[in-house]
Image 1 (spheres, one colour):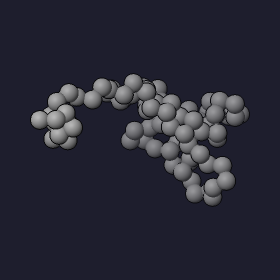
Image 2 (spheres, rainbow, N blue to C red):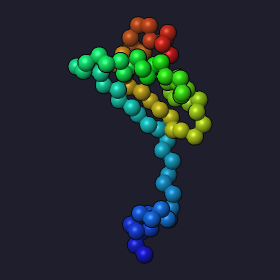
Image 3 (tube, rainbow, N blue to C red):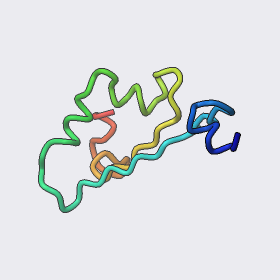
Image 4 (cartoon, rainbow, N blue to C red):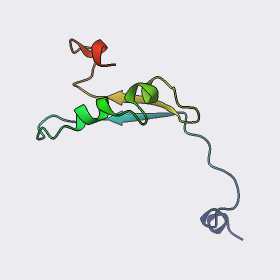
Length: 79
């Protein structure tokens, strides 16, 4: 049996865990539809839980968002 057919049937080696995920959240030039507000208001899970590693079993998450960047004033109040 070839290796390709083994993986397609779910057999064989397991995939290695993903150590880190980077999310690029681009809002520039788009309409204001509230996506950034919605993600900061989420509670199940919260953005803080995801970014600070408060959920067991998920990889480290790095969020790149121009509005939530540390360089923006007041960001520390949101997170």
